[in-house]
Length: 392
Image (tube, rainbow, N blue to C red; front, side, top):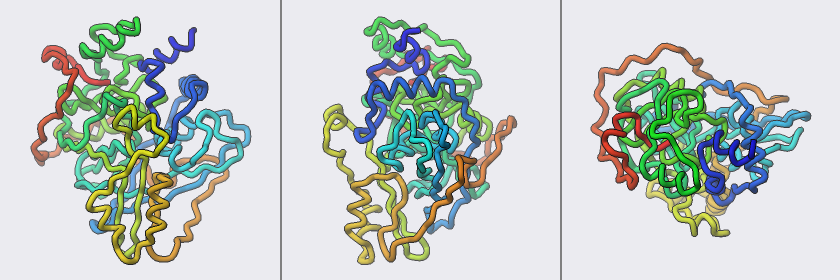
């Protein structure tokens, strides 16, 4: 089979678009991308949803980073380890600068960034932080948070930000109705999509979908590649078992908030101050193609955390420059935190929620009133919207 045809069947994304899936500092060569896609096509991930106990209301730091040793005989691509540890590719690439994306060096150690700062958002329902490509789910009454990696919209087909909505309905085995703009996009390349893509394992929406508007959904995928990347037409993608977990546990009516928070910060109860810095999403082609790192703008909340007299300005500046996607302590004596180092990759070093097949019962509490849906330039006709039309 021709490699372009294989790539299209795996991802339903044109070959040139893969050049836009990584942030500027994480670009891969065409050879690396193709090698990784082909390797990942045969990979079947088996991880469960990772859950952290919620900290006190005045604390936002959870988890611990771990280090794993790549087996000496490993021939697995980075996606293999990303799926095993419930990470997106961007998470591992940020935490391990220079790591080989299609063949991590056998025998080398790799940091798995399982420590994180919770987003500056209500601990309610689902919070999606596009900048770090993570979804946070706060099960009602559980005092836990489930953290899952996601794929988001390509440059120019961005996933919404600064939007509060809710899960309007759920569907097993969804169909996919491409918008008129999608038909035109593919037709321009000599590729033609069906009017309605039938349900099944080859559907780009995967086997489960949570609809959060006429044109957006949180859904699965027909590929084992693209989580932690900008690959979709605006929807939020998850690995198969992750979307199955959400489908089974998230009630209709659950609040969903989209944010774009590349820099997070917290002041912990003991006075320790941390920042967590991710590569911001490129906003334009010029910004994406520039050799200069995309600028970071600190929110007032983050600026307040790092303005304290106890904070080391040089440590903050180093964190803003390195953008490793992990919490960095910026005040007081340096921490001596030794990561856990198993001999070979193992299950995540945090509690897990085992998946069940029992659908969740909707909560009685009513969600906050959704805000207006963001403006969409390629909206589908109302008739299409009624038949699972969405950005994939």
